[in-house]
Each structure stands twice: as structure tokens, then as C-alpha cells.
Image 1 (cartoon, rainbow, N blue to C red):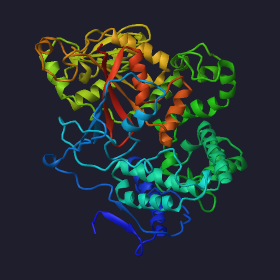
Image 2 (cartoon, rainbow, N blue to C red):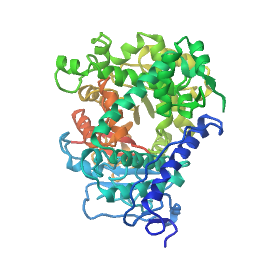
Image 3 (spheres, rainbow, N blue to C red):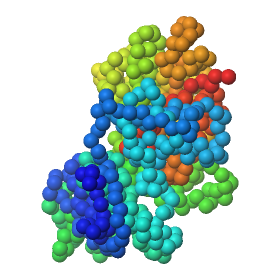
Image 4 (cartoon, one colour):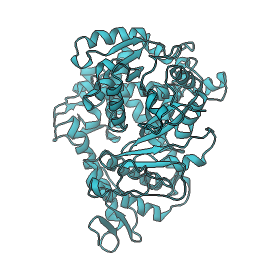
Length: 579
């Protein structure tokens, strides 16, 4: 038997695999503890109800030894010659050359071929790997085990699918060992565990469980408001009595106790016998100074508070997507519908500070570098030393340019530009004067809703910008950028092409790089959640077809997609449309 294959059969049953759920809890504890807490911190024990045993299932080890670069093979498909995909075995990026066709936001069939679900470890089905990049042979992604919204198990939506339950149990078992070191394995394991839990829960219990989780969220927000998490000792193996804690935060003890029950039962806090309370790795992240605590507050407003007015909002504006940038759910909630989201934030210095701290969580969770092929860009930058190379549109304090320069030292700051609102640029310039890594960067004030950026640059980079806006607003932003771009020569629209004399004498075409989540249709639950949060501010996470739609409407075309293999994140490359 292959040593990387695990069999559930006579020697091990699905019951054994489901026991892995207990191990999942311990590994999650260690996973968070590794980055946030001393190792002595532990979360409460969990009780797992095993699934009935069944037939034999097998699964391949999720992390086979990497294939050496020299032996990587190319996978060809005869089903679709219009699209191509390449997987870089060294950095886990899936690269797609995208065929040029008029987008239709309603069309779902091409999406099925081009979109791989989040957190897969393989290339897209029915695609051809680009011969220019070496690629390891990897299995096609299994849409049933990576967080797809489709319910394969029955449970809350139908009768039990016992075969699916066994597959999920095996998926958990296969990824347990790698979870503590590999993000992709952790995400697969958690997704399978959540689906398994949901599958064995009756429909009535599933509905009530929604409100159980909402109650946990509500109690967390109250404890944040009372600063309870900050009043509990943060040191390992330290606790505080309920009476002492009540006195410390000025809350009636009986009320504090009831609120605590919600959080100890939900494993947010830990009850210490007989009458004491202690932190868990989760609750430590909810303290005032931690970015995750700020993220929780932002999400509470944008999800929980905003949800209470959504029926009234859609009654007022119609049952359609918010067009924005003003008259969006969050500004409607605040009683100031005429304001855009960031105008609303800027009215309160504490709120904008909290928002910026929360966004640092996002920056750490999703990759910045390592997806896009920078080799052609650095070569072209050397050949055109006086040309702007990297324009960070909405680039804030220049953090992203610093990250790219650390990864690619040949990217000269003198060829980098940060463009943002005048007040943002003024603050960023003051900070940059003390930062040697940003010395030489050009700071240009600009409102991308109204103006075109610096003209003729090689790259216009937008990280988490387009997702903040509706299609009409996104089209306007991209149209403004297109006015500044150099169009590709008809015979040389691909990076690095020198196939004609015309191509050799013309400057390289400008490109837009959009770095955002790339959704499938339907997306996994967490990706759907992120899209739902964007609804509150008038934005949306998009599928490839939806990106094609806004690109086409702005006079652009999607040329290549670079996907991160461990997350739903991608870089979507666009050029001026060639007629």
C-alpha cells in the first residue's frame, strides 16, 4: 500500500476518523497558541459524538513530497483550447491565460471551467498548462470537499448521505497531521469538520444553532464594551473570580455570570472550577489592543447592526444591489445616507483608527507577493528607467510598495508611485520621511472616482479596492485608469513578446493588477460571508465572469489570472482591449 494513503476499513473505522475531531481541537489550540500565547494555555475539552461505521474509503496524503523542478510535467487537456493554466510548483500559484470573449455576467458555464474553489491543491479542470512555466502534476480539485456551498450530506437539507459522511471523516483524518503547519490543510480540515457537524444536525436544530451563534456574538460585543476581556488576567494559567471581575468592570455579578455562561459554553472563555474565569486563545484576540478585537467590532457593525435595517433599506431603495458609493446600508444605518462609507468613517477619528487596525488582520491573512510573475516587469523596468513602473492606486501609506520591494529589491522606489486622496497622501508623506525603505517614492494626490492616475505606467496596482464598490462605480474607476494606460500593439499583446518589429519599437503595454478574492459560483461559506460583508458598504467580491464584465464595460480585457493555492485570493491582470 502507498505509505501516503490512509484506508478506513477493517483496521480503522469512520468512528476512528471522527475521533480526529478531538485532535482537531487540540491542534487548533496549538495553532493559535503558537502565534499568540504561551503553550500552557488550553481551551476547554470538547465532546464529540462519533458517526456510525461504514464502508471502506481511501484518501491520498494531502502533502506529498514536492516534485523536483526538473521533473515537473505538463498536463494537457483536449477539451478546451481557449484557456490555459499553469501551476508553479515552487510557490503554489495557479496561472491562467484567459481567452478574450465578450463577458456576460449571467453566464455560469464558463465559470465552471475557469474558477477553482478556494483552498484547492490542484489546477482547474479542462484547462491546459502554459508551456512557459514548469508545473507539477497535481490532482483536479474536488468541489465537494473544499468548502463548496452545495450540501452533499443531507442533514439539515435532506436525508443522510452516509457515503459523504465517510468521505468527510476521511478528509478530516487525512489533513490532521499537516494542519498545524500548512494553511491549506487547516482550511480543508475545518471546512470538512463544519460540514460534517452540519450534516448530522436536524433542520430544527440547525435553525436554532444560528441564534445560538448570534447570542455568542452578542455576548462578545457586550464584554468588549465593558472591557471584560482586558480585565481577565492574560498570563498563562491565571484566572479571576466572578465576584472580583464584576467589581473590576462595574457589573452586577449575577448579570456577569449569565453573560459568561454564553461564552464559556461557546468555548470563547474558560470556566475554572469552582467560580473563576480564564482566557482562551480566542478571547485573548478580542482584547482592546489586538487587531482582531478591532476586526470584530467592524464586522459587528457591518453585519449584525446593519442586518437589522436591511429590510427597511431595500424597501426604500428597491430590491437590487446598492449602487453606491453613497446611499449604502451602513450610511443608511447611521442616518446619514448621503455619505460614502469612508466619509462616514472619517467623521470619527476613533472609528477610522479602529478600521485601519482591523485591516492589518486582512493584510496578514492574504498573500501580497508570490503570485504575480514579476520577472518580465523588472526586466522592462530596467529597459525603461525613466518610465513609472508601479502605481499603487489607493495605496495609502505605501505599505504594499515596501512589501514588493522587500521581495524584489530591483524594483526601484524612484519608479514607484502611491496615489490616494490628498489627506491620505499628506499623512503618508510625513510618515515616509522617516522610512528609508520609501525614500524616492512619488506621492501623488488623486481621487480615483474622478481622475486618471499617472500616465503611461507599466503597472496600475489595486489591492482590495474594486471589491469596495458596485459594478457601476468599479467600471468608472477602471475607465479612469484606462485613460492613462498604454495599449498593447496588436501583434504583441502578451508579456515579453517580441514577435514583430512593431512590438520591439513600441513601449510595453500597461497592465492593471487587481489583487482580491476570486469567488466561485457558488462560493465556499467563508468566501460568501466576505461577499456579504461587502454588501453593507456597497461593494462585492466577484467571480471571474463578473471581473470580465466590469473590465469589458471599462474598455479592458482580462488577460491572465494568478491564483494563490492556499486561499481564494488571486491577481487578475487586465489590459486595454484590442479591437
